[in-house]
Amino acid sequence: MSSSIAMLGTSGACGASMHAPATRDNARTSVFGRHCALDTHQPLPGQQPKSFKEINSCRETEPHRETEPSFYSEEVDRFAALDQQPVTLHRLLETCAPPLTRSKLLANAQFLARERPVRYAKRVKLFQRLPYIVNLNPHIHAAYQAYYANFTESRRFSQVENMEDEHKFISMLARQSKLLLDIMPQIARGFYECRHYFRPDDRRRFLDRLIKMRIGLRLLTSQHIALYDQFHANNSVAAPDHAALADPTHRHQGIVDNQLHVTDMVHICAQSVQAMCDMTFGDSPSFIVDGQTDVVFRYIPTHLDYMLTELLKNAFCASLKSVQNTDNEIPPVVITVSKGDSRVAIRVRDRGGGIPSQIHDQVFDYSFTTTKHTSFDDPGEDVVPSDGSTHVADANAISGLGFGLPMTKIYAEYFGGMLNIISLEGYGCDAFLELPSIKLNRTPTIQI
Image 1 (tube, helix red, strand yellow):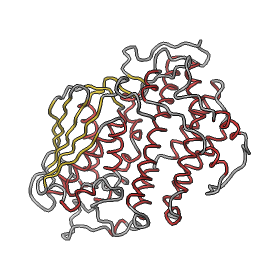
Image 2 (image 1 turned 60 degrees about the horizontal axis):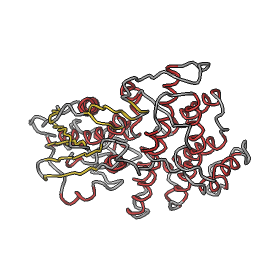
Image 3 (image 1 turned 45 degrees about the vertical axis):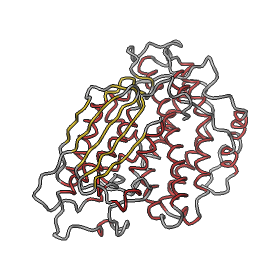
């Protein structure tokens, strides 16, 4: 971790990890493939807001007009002014009870179809409040256009009344998710380039809010896709309005794994980062997993995957850099797992030299990086070792733009966890990730 604390992937081999947790889902479907539903016998998540009628009214306004993203859109203003439905984690999990029926699936789709244009409109308005010069940045503007396009398509989508509508809705979700696949690396690059144009506190507030919005909508969307997959894994479209359980052990509730094996996830992530290092640097540290290696807890695998990968990338890069231009062996990275009454702790320890004291307080700042970029337009101009070696000359392929640790901290805190970094300058770093087991009686007020 140490001096390369900001070596977090936004491009090349490591870029996938910034796309947020779901980017490796296809490769790990065995971990994430169970589903659930919202209870249709009670009101949908949160209170029935008076804005539902307003939403339908907004949908009927010029449904086929093709508009260029504008900072003065009445449609965006109308939807952004509507109340976002407060969906608590408690409510989402409490209503994920089998059996999964067609009516539950359609009710969940109807809720999400109403909610998406409102949430996208609020995100578009967030961009509109940025300084004008920041919105001129091509990366920021491209991100704005992507969110605006998703808002427009979501606004125009008619309500989900039957399974044919549901198929179309799922296709739209897949299409919109693909459009946003590279959005966070794009935003990271844009904000790095614009870092001198507005104050760090303003930048932090904007990005904290944007990332939390992103996490919430991705959770709701992923949950619905999980419901859809489960329903069709067990029933045909013409099946009666009931379903057999795909997971009779009840291990999964949608995207939540009730029996997540921490050590298994650690090995998956560490091996993935090893492969990144091998591809980028030609070598990688070994790793050791110790402590309570049989720990099982209830969490969202994609979130843990993202956080572990970011912390391990820091540790692996620091370990490699510590022996650069020496004959010393690469020190191993040690991952220790433990569990208390209701929380799981994971420590990632490296011997990569620690964080210099003068920058220790900046490691959670957006756009802060120790990677030396002389030109983003020409990565080839990055600083390389004076001896001409290529061992870390390609560092930019596994280094980032200062978003990895701040985003990891937000993901850790989203469900009440925490992330701390302790550095012994000249020796190495310990990153402590502490996460609560997601329980109905202990997460009643967390809103998505």
